[in-house]
Image (cartoon, rainbow, N blue to C red; front, side, top):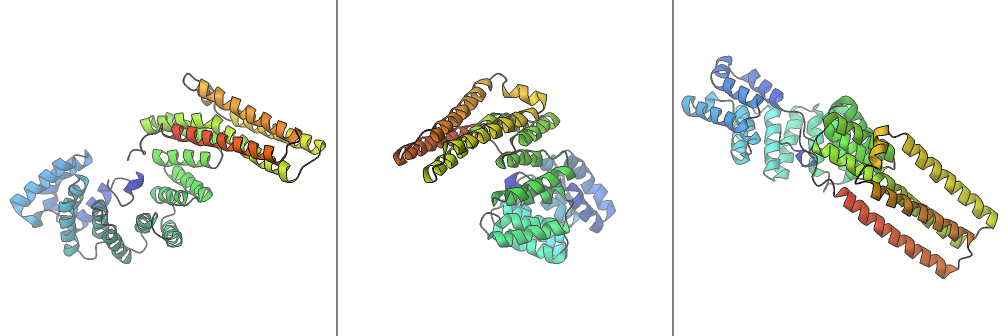
Length: 375
């Protein structure tokens, strides 16, 4: 459904149950059979325009009071007719001012109409009526996560998590908010919890694969993307799997560049003896060879084959060759007696290498042209 959190694509589960339950608690059963029964069948088939047409005929035949305003508003909202939906949401609130669900629905509609301040006000009113609803707090956090202060946003997120710790949607959106604010370790924890609570949540799995790679856990990210592509098989999962495979060797190139910068500056500022240089080179070679080999071996066999599959073999070889060239260059820097100008020249070359890495990383990421599809 359309939702306050919809810009992420991480929408909550379908809201039919919530809306229809609220309607059933307040509406006579005989009208449900006469008017809403056919509409419910269309809603189950996600034919919202047709459901609206059925409800419209009910209004024309039996009057506006013959159709629950909340249900009509929600169907209009799902059909994309948000101006009309807002009017019926107001009727629903007038009919039952103590309905937190009606206020929640109005907030969703107002957000779609690009009226975030009014949407937030409606959500705060819903919170006053239902203070233990974690989703309300999370939606408020999402409204302000880009423009609001992180401290206030984090407070809302924490209140949402306190009230709904076992809600996969709340955990997933918490991860996205922390991810946006570069709290990657915490974002990873919430993504993992979201996947644990809802293993079929493809969006959470894709986000987890991305954050693992961001944190330098290349092979773990590849594995999650591979499992997701195999589990779901949709275009976004396959696209992300292809991207993380292409990133895998290029991230090692970037790590080699980082190492080169550190050792070049160290050798420039604190010249070391030949023995120390040899120890540094040996440690670097062991760390890179061991880390690279281990990272490769922990991948599933299918992923190792896919790394060098047709279309990826060339980029993989190019990334490995560049990594070896940088590591070889580090050896020349440490074993050679470079002056200050030469060290500056090496830094300039490394800066060019970083520029190349950024360009390639951007091009690889563009392979996933669209955001994850909605549930």
